[in-house]
Structures are given as structure tokens and as C-alpha cells.
Length: 333
Image (cartoon, rainbow, N blue to C red; front, side, top):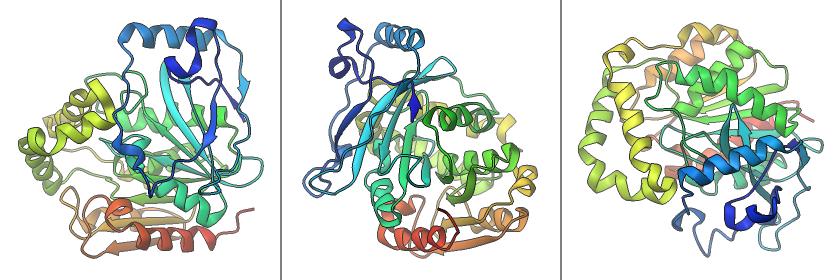
């Protein structure tokens, strides 16, 4: 599994130039939530040093993950550099030469930790590997580019994601994207047409901007101080405000009102499952209808009752069943 990797400053021993991934047991989710602990946030000078050190190093092999005594699921974590930016990643389950890989793409306010237990549980259910990463500017990744450009979905899907897939040595991928991550999964599948991508699963993905999206984001701005700031700080450290305002500013900008990726859908020939909560305040069922009707390959829609914008947290077990059934029905070896 070729990768330029490194851990946090304290774990990796930057003073002696050690650059390698961390091979450790998965945490027991029943005892302590992974996302509940505050994350250390290196300052800008340390990020610069980390980037420079990784750039000097040749590609390394990530050690095969070892099984956890608690869950039986292997976990490896680390950092890599993509387009000059430090990227946090986590790997659950078998390596890419032993099984297909679920590639998780997070939402506009998400990161590795924000997925909580869903990637690990789905990997366990299917016997697949799971590759989860935080985009630049999110979670424990280095700072990203602000303000977000209007084509930020395309840049991630067509430039950063392909490089990560190459670095990780992924041979067969199922893209699993939530919200912004779902949009990026659709763009990657529809434009790149990478034969390694065997299927796509989207949850609350957007393919166009609609009135309810704008209304939902405007409501989120009003709720930021009371409802968003504390959990975002838990996940993103001192980047929390940049994460929130970067998202809200671009989506509410006049230039983004006519944004759409609908033309890219016709390039998607892989099997696709599009999931939407019926009470999603950021998007309507029209998003799923547009996706299913616009792709060229077989597509299924799943509308989850009494569910909002985050199905993998609000309806985790039902969603695990649905995604496992969908992916399990495909001929992936």
C-alpha cells in the first residue's frame, strides 16, 4: 500500500525525522466515542515543517493493519501530502490487495472523526477495507484554501481524490459520499471514469442548489454560536470557524445560486445507490430523482423516513443494512 505517511508531531517524533503510519487497535466505540475527545491542533509553522519533511521522503509502505482484540477490525492512521497539503487518513480492515475498498468522502463540515463508527461497521459487515480521509482544512488535516472557490467540488473530485487513490494502491473502490462528499463521488465517477471505481453510494448528495438548501444554510448561520461552534471545534480545532463560514459563504453567494453538476451524471455507468432523508433541511427528494434519472448505469433510490441530513448517524443500522445489501449484490472480488 504505497503512501507518504506520518503521524502527529508528538506521535511521529519529528525531532528524529521519523515518518511512518500508526498501526494500532481500533477504539472500543461502546466505551468511549472516538469523536468526543478534543483534537490537538498544530500551529501553522508546524504544518509547514510537516509538509516539508514528508515532501523530502520517498514513498513508504504502510504496515498491514493488525486485528483489534475488541472489534477484530484493523486500523491504521497517518498523514500524507496531496497537492502540497497535509491530509489525514485512516484505514480499517484488509489492505487493497486482499479485498475491495470503501472510500469515504465526508460532508461540508465533516472529517474522519465525524463519520464515527459507520466506516468501521460497514467494512466489518462486507469484509472490505475502508479508507477514510479529511480534506485539507478539515479535521486533523492541514489548512485548506479559503475562500472556497466555486469549483471546489470539482477540484477535490478530479485532482485530489485520484492522487489519494493512487497513493493508497486501491484496486477496486466503492465510493461512499455524504453531502458534499456525495457530490464529489458523483463527479469523480462521472468525469474520471476510473475503472477501479466499481460502485457509488451517495447520502444527501447535492447536484444543484435549491431554495431549501439556501434556507437551511441561512438557519445554520443563525444557530452557529449555540449549535455548531462547539461540535465543530471538537472535530476541527482552531479551523472550526473557517470550516463553517467557508461552507456557508460559498453556498449563499450569488455566483453559486445556479451551481449544478447535473451534466456530469450521464458519465456514471457504475451501479449507484442514492440515499436521502425525507426531512433533510438542506435538500429535497428532487436531488435523488435527478441523480437516479441522470446516470447511465443501474441506479437505486432510498428515501429514509423520519431522517434528516445525516443518515449514517440518524438511521445508522438501517443504512448499514441497505448499503451492505446493495454492495453485497455486486460482483466484487
